[in-house]
Structure formats: structure tokens, C-alpha cells
Image 1 (cartoon, rainbow, N blue to C red):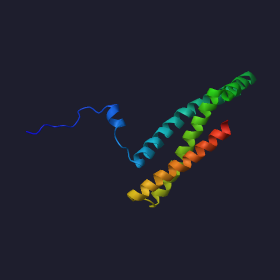
Image 2: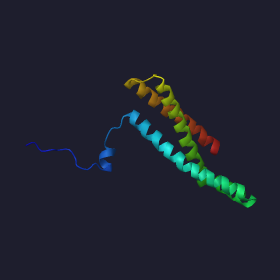
Image 3: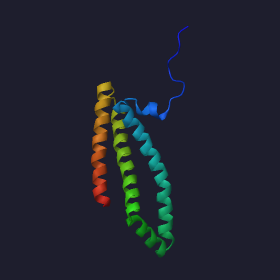
Image 4: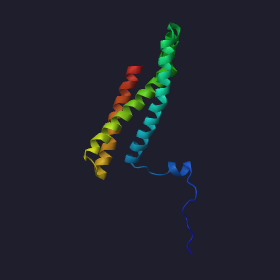
Length: 128
């Protein structure tokens, strides 16, 4: 009988040593951006409630958003929105039948990463 050399449990070290295809990276980051946006909606609704509660609440929220941590969180949410938007457009284009080959998928993944990086850099300039 042949001994099975496959690992029984896959750990983080095994996943980090794996060469992920760019299409997988684009897909996973699209899902992560969606989760970040979902959580960010909760923070946004809370911020809206605080800002509408009173003038002092608005001023407090304004000071939190203009702090370095607030700017970083704002940039993070804008980054997730930019990437999720660009990847969503990529999916809409691919749903029409364009780029369904492996080469087309790789090109679309690279293009979505490039354009989202451009939008993320612009968001950083805007928030600062």
C-alpha cells in the first residue's frame, strides 16, 4: 500500500507558500472589499445618527473624522468601495461574454487591480 504524503491539515504557512493566481487574488479581494463595505455601512449609519442627534454630536463626529485615525478609516472605506466598484464592473463586462477565457480573465484581473489602485491613490490624496 502506498503512503499518502498529502497534508492532513492545511495551515497558514501552507497557504502563504502557495503561488496564488492573479484571478484568485482579484476574486478574494473583491469578497473582502464587500465584507468591509458591509461592516462600514453599520459605522456609516451610526455616524449619521450621531451627526443628526445634536450639534455637539455633529461637531464630535467632525473632529473624529478629521483625526488621523478617522482619515485612515475613511480612506479604507473609500478604498474598499473603489475596488468593489471596479471589480463589479469587471464582472458585469464578463457577464456579457467578454473575457471568459483564461487569458481574458487574467487581463481583466490585472486591469481591475490597476484601475482600483489608481482610484485608491486618488482617494488617499482626497482624504489627506
